[in-house]
Image (cartoon, rainbow, N blue to C red; front, side, top):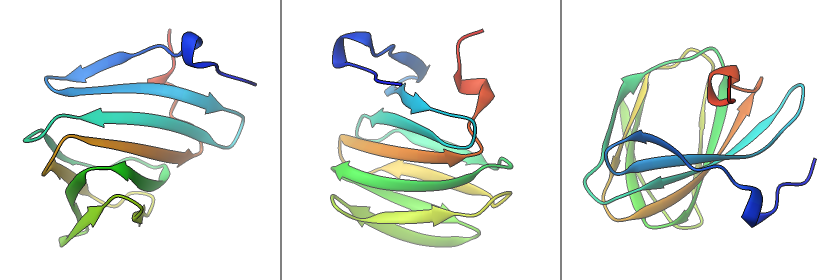
Length: 108
């Protein structure tokens, strides 16, 4: 599966946050997340294992009660079922990998 820039579908998630599913298969999904400075992603959990890579900007992640600030070039693992939240400290671009893929991110 190849997704060209012209094929990306931008999905609004909340004010100041959009996502685009870049690619997905049976066991893995890659998602681009854009956050405006000041956006708060409320604490939540899901059964998917998640790895987040910060392409640009910086954000504070709280994973399982532990807070870490990540900058461009840094990443974190969010285990399956772990409660986590994010605060964008600057305009930020993130890449999330999910396993298994998030069916709720795919068009109906």
